[in-house]
Length: 419
Ligand SMILES: Cc1ncc(COP(=O)(O)O)c(C=O)c1O
Image 1 (cartoon, helix red, strand yellow):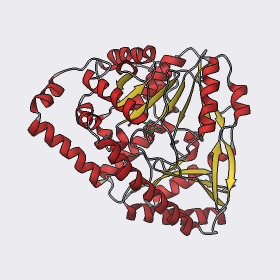
Image 2 (image 1 turned 60 degrees about the horizontal axis):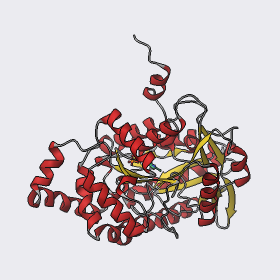
Image 3 (image 1 turned 180 degrees about the horizontal axis):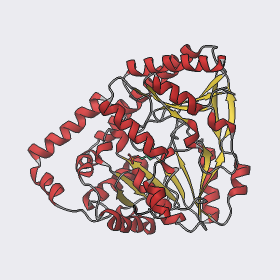
């Protein structure tokens, strides 16, 4: 049997994100009894599904030539020119950004975009690093480093709040100490997957200043944020300038199947990413772009974000918080991260006698799928007990599924604290 290369073994072997996607796919397609409080799948929001079906219908019945062109043609590797123009105009209009179409590059989903960005900026030789200012951070980045030392994360500073609530902040002293000349970029998701954290404007500005002073980009992953899908339940002004690299995905609008996202960045970065698209995939899939284009040109998207998506997930967040808090009562010394965006509850089980990994296994046996916290703490310089005390719980599935899952989870947690 041919042995894989070191890099091949790393990318082709099992890892957290692969297990997560495998279980998500299996639960959603083959195991109707599993309560899927795992992955980051968007909810099937009826209004959004109707909106996408209407876009399909229009393409099929009213603009068959546009559909034919989308199906029969490879786009240029940076994306469909009309889509890039429309996206730049949309961002200028809706966000007041001074970007041009050259600052917009279409990517085959945010996940692939981050792999390309990390490879572009940090490479494989270990001399350059990506700095994540708050651990925990998105599981999907964890295995994208081509060198074991390419990622550094700073443990989030915990602020304990009343009523079983907490919030992570950036520990700027530790961040400054970690900002060595090898750091090639700072990266954070906001709202953060897994915690639902939204950094304050003051924290964001400080990060921007630190990055700009060192001449390195700040990468802002807006998978759940603005300008879409807008699953953000607090104040947030979308920002961009040439020192920022902003990732915006179509997935959480309800289109993960189209595997389409955009990166907004300096032309130097967007050109390099377009070239990488050519090398890796020739071109992007263009159906997602074809579906979204009319909404970028009309006013439909901001309205859908404001009136459908945000209230939908905000209600789900409120409900999940209520159900879990009521179910846990005083049965465990827990805290939930302040839910400021995204699709997740982040549960901290303080000094839990049973690890999050073991709880995950026990819950799976009771047909509840969650994600144990340790996957989200990559790049730390020292082990942190906290990473084995947290669970990520997705609340985007139907209410009955979430409710049942949370009640079973609370039972298992209570059992764990009695051990
Ligand atoms: C924070 C974050 N970034 C990026 C992605 C990648 O999403 P996609 O590849 O579907 O655009 C996800 C997916 O859940 C995510 O949660």
